[in-house]
Image 1: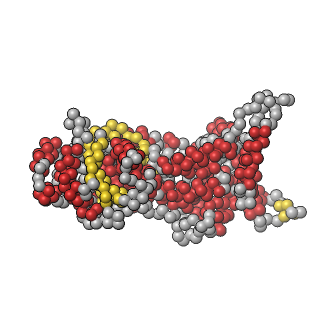
Image 2: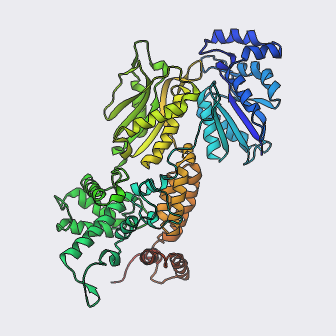
Image 3: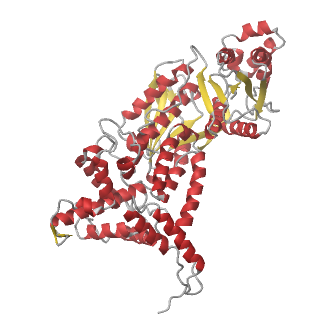
Length: 620
């Protein structure tokens, strides 16, 4: 095992704070050619000097390589602030402490360029890196975008990394999210997967005062799959058959309602059976709240779409607003009836269409956007964020100083300032700011029922950006929603910060899911596969980082092999290949026949229906 340290070079490494190009050139001239001892005196107190002291204390194992990341020189000095000259000035000082120090150059101080450099570095056969390599990164000095790019790629590749606050006592910035142990249970409850909560071994951790494996979960799971023996256990029988009383009909109608509504939350209403049964009950007034207009054209169009889809092979058809409203209303009433659900938020049942989503956005306002009078008018950036998300509603939680006043507005966007009281915003304040932002989220009731959380990078102070990322990870676990990173691109100022945004894009590899959501999703996907719930497993893995998305591809291939519909045949003869495929698919169902007999029977029917080809022309 070895240890590698990475430092992004910036003007602060020369003891300067946001200098002009002329001031930087003068400082470089002053430092060039100094004796090592004199250079060390000049650089005392800088981020690089602090980082060298820190890594000298890491001796198990020691740091055997230090990489200085700098930006390349360009013929046009307006392109970006090159830090290559800065790196060459401090290199003799650094090599006194760590002889194996190199300078690596990237074109721009951007997330994308830093990721590309690290990808090339790690893929190089001569690279001194193994899976056991430990990485040390300081927060302080240099472009934060480059630091984040390195972090993204290390996390996605599963490397062990430590982020240090490059000031004061040099505290380790904790990357482990809060609420990690209860995250699987929260995700299951939000998406109405009660079976794992009832039967997981070992039991999943749930919030106090609940207990894992509570009988309440077992009842909800059995009702969800319309387990008649359990539901009607207390009802009278005649000749070994239940009497169809009003009570029995009401119990079964409630079970159909549960199977339908909770199936929407899981995204599983694609076979048409549950929808047809629910609509029949709704049209005849057999539900608590019947449809006000059974012949609504939107409802009928949705029903036709659902019936036309094949189970396990398509995305569900999004129900119309009136259906979603009815299911959410029913779910809220269920929360009042079942104490076990009251430890969780009143989460909606049916996810809305993409254009109607509510997204929580976490961001730090740019320093350059705060004039002396304290007004902040970042209308262009606000518009780009909204366009990148494409959501109907946005709750924007924004770090601001106590003197700032936000002025930009946009329809569908609620701006919620989170006032930062410490004007210095040092790196060792990350944890304080993280807690402050999370508390602000807890104080807003709409935040926990939002459909997604997004973090905007790389705009704002370093401490605030990292705090927003960590709070976003925490909130994605707490609210059981995906975490999206929005990356702003544009022109960089003298210290590497973006001062003018040209566009905002979503980062689809979700690197910070590695720190929290991946673990919960992987656990749930494994549980789903043991039940042959292949659709759910693929859906779960697709919501994770690039690592899980790669597994989702394999699971989707399994899904096609298990449920794929063969093309129409040219004759009416069943082929040997079809029979062989049918046997293989039935053997797959045998794996769950003891633990889930009804599911096994249903899957067997669906698989066989998709195995034997339908002739192009049926004989009358």
